[in-house]
Amino acid sequence: MQTKAVRLYGKNDLRLESFELPQIGPDEILAKVISDSLCMSSYKAAVQGADHKRVPNDVAQNPVIIGHEFCGELVQVGEKWADQFKPGDKFAIQPALNYKGSLNAPGYSYKYIGGDATYIVIPHEVMEMGCLLPFGADNFFGGSLAEPLSCVAGTFHAMYHTTRGSYAHQMGIVPGGSMAILAGVGPMGLAAIDYILHCDRRPGKLIVTDIDQARLDRAASILSPEEAAKNGVELRYLNTRDIDAKAALLDFNGGKGYDDVLCFAPVAAVVEQADAILGEDGCLNFFAGPSNAAFSAQLNFYNVHYASTHVVGTSGGNTDDMKEVLTMMSQGKLNPAILVTHIGGLNAVAAATLDLPHIPGGKKLIYTGIEMPLTAIADFAKLGQTNPVFKKLAELTDQTNGLWNSKAEQYLLEAMKEA
Image (cartoon, rainbow, N blue to C red; front, side, top):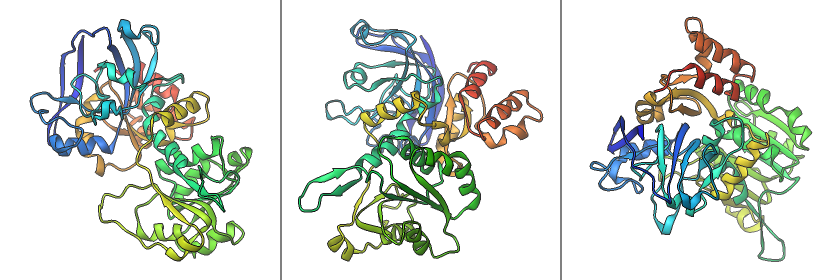
């Protein structure tokens, strides 16, 4: 089977190549990749090369396929797995295999499996670790976004509260309690709002802040207070640019501190604001991963001691988190398109991956079977003035408030020539 893939050979050395895949063994699966979402972790692997903890030392001689947020269809199933999987099944993959304690992962460590490819061979360890996951929605992009969405689910599961009079911790947010999400209308913030409004453990009050009114207005149009109210949540969006943010946040909660506060910006002032509005036994979740290893902010330890305030952070989700968000997407409870701002083909991967920190917006979604420059969804209408494909994509995304959607995906896959 011939495949086309973006392979890593060393630091800043990504190459789009065609090559032959080996015949699968009885404990392997041949699969067709449809979509992959570019991740900053791939950028880190690309610039670090063999120095990256998941990239093999001999990558220059045995290049690996990059991309670990992917979705596709099974093509041929080895006999060992024939009772669990069948050709045509739609799948997603949890890349953090943790197989026998190894850091090896699809998208970093393997010659024949990664998201930025047309066809791949799924090795036995993926199935043995329960990391080949069925996906039942009417699209592929949701499967690609299951991994970043699992990070959102995981961060809420990691939050905890104490039980007064004992040392038992209650995991999760306070049901029906008060929650603030600070700097929360970026793509991952929107995903967090979407999740917490539609999961089975919701707050009673939720306030979301930012200092960009246009972003706040867009967030309110996508995840409205009216939609939140249908799920029993009082939702408010607040611009904190020119106001006393602490006073306004506490006022929304009747003058009391919050049960759960999430910080979505690695900015000391925002972290300290989050700490300042914690209530008794309040949990501060620092979601934003800083690039500065020395990043720090002040914390009120008087409240840590006397009010039992505490801090938690997570980096990624686990397989159970992925299963949860895949199920929620299949049930129509989560909209993964909230994350997506750019669409492209396999030909765009190498350059986009190496330039990822400098490309604005949210997730960059790649369809591996097409050729297409990386293009912002917001630019579809302008490009559509001279290109009928972009004109149609603009019409389809306009139907969902500028968000990517299943109809747009289906049209794109049919309209664009295969890579």
